[in-house]
Image (cartoon, rainbow, N blue to C red; front, top):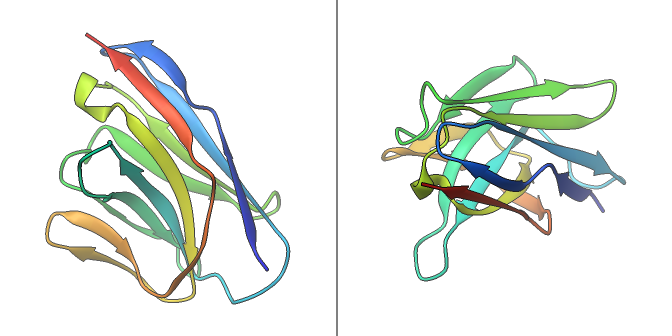
Length: 128
């Protein structure tokens, strides 16, 4: 099975930056789309960004567009999320997700079709 491991979370002040990493290992279902979701206790899971591996196309939630950037290093089997101009409302647990379907948008948020692997999460805390 595919296993995902996130790293790079931490605490920053508003306006600061962080870079999250997600390393994939193991074998299982095909991976075509990888991305990041986030969740705050008591609120719905939000798809933040996703990258379609076959062509490198990306989708972003409206709430992070222009501030976050998702990228990949195929050789290292690693997905990155660059978080710039962070706001207190970006504070959440961030999860790396992989799926065999396409990346898409559902309303104003990103989505991964046929998601089959989730990481344990890495926490991002942004102070005002």
